[in-house]
Length: 232
Image (tube, rainbow, N blue to C red; front, side, top):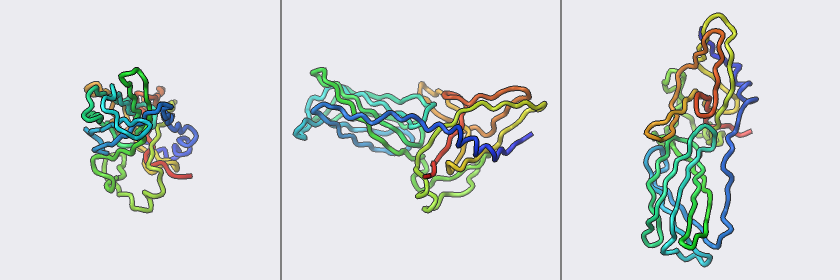
């Protein structure tokens, strides 16, 4: 038996768990960080970080920089990168964006003196298709339509994850093929996986619940993704 579960839209709003973003924290140090990202789409990227003193001058020997990237929803492991070498006071750090969405990049600097500087930066990472090629996919993975400018402007561009338990008390298996929500432009089923020590998410076509069993949607496993959240 296949259930479209259009009514799940109401449930999603009730259980919507907007991800707890790592809060922006500006260091109280006299030093500041300037970050530039080359490559704002899924895949390998390069991040440059320069350190400036209170007068705006570049610090030639800034120490060690550690970058931590978190998506703005729960369920994804962070991505780390670091560098101990700065050329003319500028770190060049290879980094990989593992999926599209809103990311919080935390830059942690440890100066040779032992002083620490920490700042957060927010980025919107695009899919490999590019900013203006954002297809809406149906549950079979087929492209249904592309967002026009009016639709794109009506969304926040952010994503969130939804977790719940769904119980099948019937005598036969249930397959949930699709879901929708008034809170988001796209609703997708995802699974978190570890690939070469990197946390990724992959799309899941159908959620199957055997008769008399319960399916748990949880961080680090199966979950529902709300993409392109609407303004309210």
